[in-house]
Amino acid sequence: RLRGHPHAPEPLRLLPMIKTNSPSPPQHRGQFHHVFEDRNFQGRNYECSGECSDLHSHFSRCNSIRVDSGAWMVYERPNYSGYQYYLRRGEYPDYQRWMGFNDCVRSCRMIPSHQGSHRMQIYERPEFGGQMMELTDDCPSLYDRFHFNDIHSCNVTEGNWLLYEHPHYRGRQHLMGPGQYRRFNEWGGSARASAPSAELCDLEGLC
Image 1 (cartoon, rainbow, N blue to C red):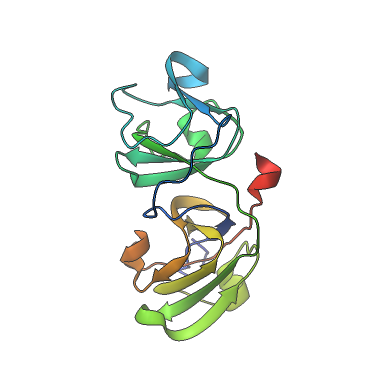
Image 2: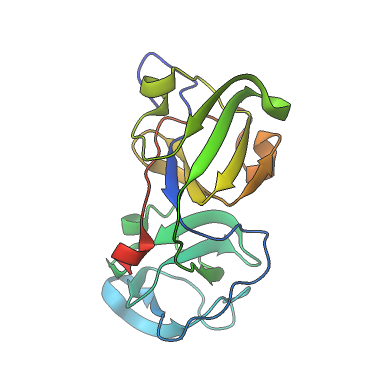
């Protein structure tokens, strides 16, 4: 958290993604990643080519991942719950490389690319109350830009976002798709949800 601000807001990262509770996205051929039980791509591995709500039958733990193509969200628990982690194309030789808290990965979801603009309104009170600020691009520190200590509701009107627990894209991540979030618990946030960073990612350029 930012020094001098014990309740500094959670970072936001703009991402062209689907909402976690929206219908299953269409499957895109040629996009896949490999999950390995041990670090440095060792041990038993499993290839994922689409979303899967329960990976437990395929491996018992996950200590490294290689994303060959596409972009993904992987989840700590089955049915797309628990800690969430955003993965782009590349190699992750241990779970700390994707900011993981443990070696549990139990479900995954492919992220379809998004074309178009991004827009989100954030509010300092529940039910869209208090001061409102609008985001349309990346922001490494929402506190520095807007002087918000906490975010208690938001309205995503265009594109998708990734909300982070700490400034500069650190800590827990929350996938935010288009829709209204009247209270912090609707996006899985803590009792004092906040927002000091936001980044817009064009997956067309990453995948």
